Image 1: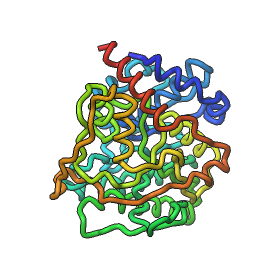
Image 2 (image 1 turned 30 degrees about the vertical axis):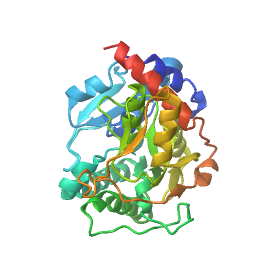
Image 3 (image 1 turned 30 degrees about the horizontal axis):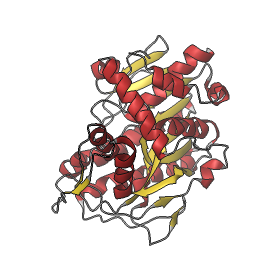
Image 4 (image 1 turned 135 degrees about the vertical axis):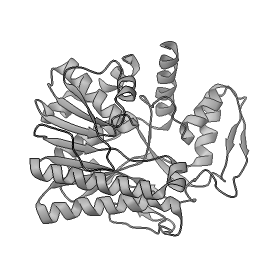
Length: 349
């Protein structure tokens, strides 16, 4: 069912942000994931609200799941394309103007249990889409991650030119290392073949539009607080992380599709959200639990869940801001937005 909360959030995106894509064909991978599905829904909103006439080719593995995730936003301008991204691209497509490659395996348990699959899917899919971008002279945006940085020296501000340490003996390193390789591949295609491609290094993304079944820390924290239950951390909670509201992330993607410089990478983050996991958990307790929840620790010494190692990472957003983008929502606003969205979804059954 179409979301009033989500549409209200989309209405805060300036109409001009959609202007470069009017009457264009856009390919979006990972269209049943958070970022991909939000982008498809945002263009669907623009088509209805502004008559943008954007045609979307949403790449998915499971069309039944896609129909459920995109319920209320499907139209004749939204085309579902079934494709296994770990294999050669075989889908029949018209000439594509823009590509957003948002597909990735992001579940920590899979990173630990099936690291070869994570690497293969990342590399094969990115090269296939770069080949498509080359053939169609399309602009491409690769959705990377703040995990690209690994562990930087203490007090280092993570500007886009920095590169930290990643322990390649850890199976879970398949994810950040494959992000690095994919960015490298994008830059190689830009230099060797003139492909217009740039990368977006997203911080932890949440807010309106988070999908059913989401189990990352921010969702666990809010669920526990709203149920007046304790929040249990499986780590010390001392990792410093960074966040970006889901709608601010979509605004950033639109900005980079229109104005991102080929061969460049851009952090997508609200710098004011930088915090430790422990402090975020406490903030949620203080603001959403009516004073009844507590923070407790049950540390998983063997890390069977595949949590990333403690990192001290502070992302810098200045490069993206030079393109005219700025974040609108902070941590508390994002949690409030998420709470309203969850309430709406529960009310709609």
